[in-house]
Image: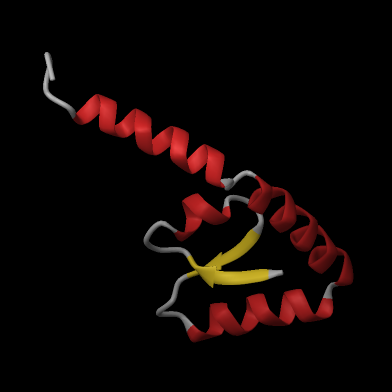
Length: 78
């Protein structure tokens, strides 16, 4: 299970597979950690979602999306 900051690109990457907290709020972090440690169902759910989420990030997808970005960025006629 993942408990992480709700800033930067982390929410986009984690999706619903993590508990996201304000990194400047130690009580929120402690609460999220307590939830994950104390709730077996939540923990298993986050692990399952995390593994599913991780499978979406393949090298093939990375290569395909990188190539598409390069094609969009190149000047016309090049």
